[in-house]
Image (cartoon, rainbow, N blue to C red; front, side, top):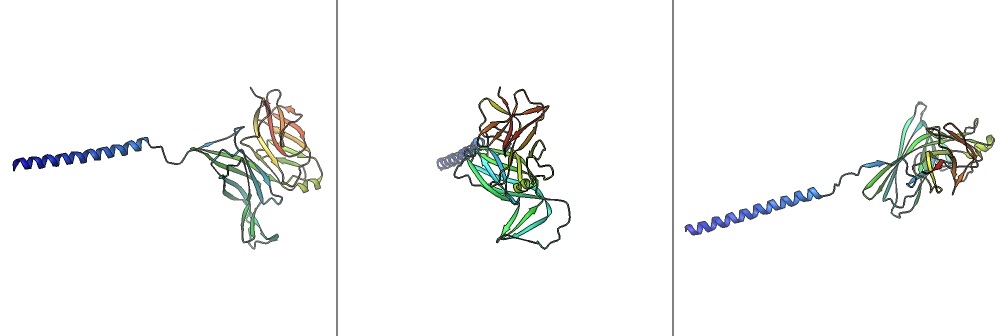
Length: 296
C-alpha cells in the first residue's frame, strides 16, 4: 500500500512539473514574441520641406475661382496619398443652382473670416506617376452648390506613405485676380512678383491666378541646383498669361552665375539682373520659376 501511494505521489509530482514547464515555456514564448515583434503603432510622419527629386504639387485655379485643380507629380513609388486644404473665407457665400446664381437667403454680413478645410484621398492603386483632382471651395448637393467667398490664402498639406515610411509636405498658396491697377501677381510670402504687360481688358480676361511654392521640381538641367524657394504660377488651363516681368527675392545674396529659370515643358534660362538678394527678368508666360546656380 505504501508503495502504491509513493508511485501515485511521484506520478502526481511529475504531472505538476510538466504542467509548470509547459506554462513557463508558453510564457517565455509569448514574452519572446513580444520582445521580437515589430511595433504596430502609428508611423511617425517626417516633414519633407524640399527634395529636388521628390514629389510635388502644382495648383491651377478654375475660371470662376470657386475651385482649384490639384496636380501631383512624381508619385508612382508611393502607396497612399491624402491631402488637407486649409483656407479662410468671408462670411458671405454664393449659392449656385445649375448655372444660376441665387441669393442664399441669409444675412451673412457679420464681417471677419471663417476657417475652412477640405480633406480628400488620392486613389493610388494604379501607381501612376501623376494624379489630378479638382477641389471645391464649398459643397455641392443635388445640383446646388454653396461656394465660399473671399478665398485668397491657404495651405495644402500632403500626407504620403511609402512602405513603413510616412512624409508630410506643406505648400503655401495665394489665389488672386490680377491687380488691375498694378497688374501684379504675388506669392503668399511676397517674394515672387509677376508684373503683367497689358491693358485692363487683358487682365480681366485672365480671371484668377494661383501661386504656390513647391516641395520638388522637374528634373534640373545638368550641373545645376536650386537656390531658395521654387514657385509655380498658373492661370486657368484654358487661359494664357501674357508677357511680363518677374522678380524673385532670396533670403541672402545669390552666388555668381545665379539665374532665374522658367519651366514650361523644359527649363529655360532667363536673362537675369541681380540687385542684392533680388533677381529680376522678363518672361513670356506662366510656369515654374526658380533660381538655379552651379552645383558643387
